[in-house]
Length: 365
Image (cartoon, rainbow, N blue to C red):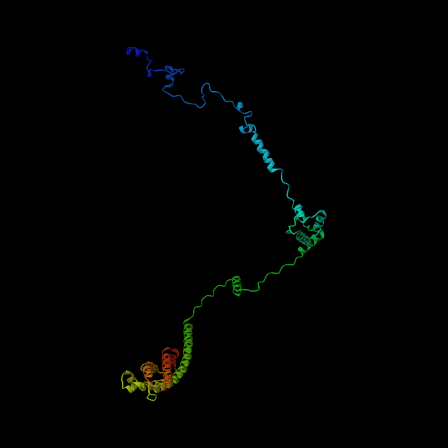
């Protein structure tokens, strides 16, 4: 049996033994000192690695100002594309001729074309319409080249036009048919020179007193005119008051059985009581109306009060008594209307009419 020690001696060197790759460059201490120097080398931008090839522009481009695309040789594909483009586009299109197209549409030959050119504008349009109708196509537009040319003006025509321009009549100034009178007056006043305001005159004491007397006389004259109108109004009120007083007394009398239902039932009350004194109120109303023409203010106030009382009595007990009446309704209704209208008119006139107040002051003068 072989010995263990002999077997170990025959084994190869350990795998972990330090080895070097064949052909690898060896770095000595001098090289390390250059790499590990304290101050690193600064790259200047122009340094080149030793042994690097130097590029020359002349080697790449035949002419330095040309680009690579210009010096690139044309390939077979480019030639094919250019040929296909020429086949598609073909030759350049011919210029558009409107005269030729017009003649082709209407089938004009040279003779018809010359004859068409010698026609005037109206006949040309007629020919185009007739030709288009015959061919069954829409009428095309006439080119400007085929329209009749206007004759050039002669020297005589130019001279005639110049003379007409020189002898042209002057146009009349426009005058508006409707004028604003206020505006024209304002313009005239604005054009007139301004006048200085008149100095304010100072009146003397005698002149002031004379003006006051004149104004007082004018005011008195107006009031006297009102007094005369007031007298006429009082005459009318006297007539209306007397008629109203008669209708008032007849309405509340026993002639037409006013309120006979209440009387027959034996019921009393304030309506029956007021009916008993209504005759005195009617008499006072008539007497006061006769005395209205007297220029006494106190008498006018008393008549005014009596008229108001009579008007109120026509409302109550006048209306309840009229409702409780049998027979004579039409006559009582007429008397009621005359009495209440006369009382109301007299009272309102005595209260609101200023002419009556002026009559009380001046009388009928």
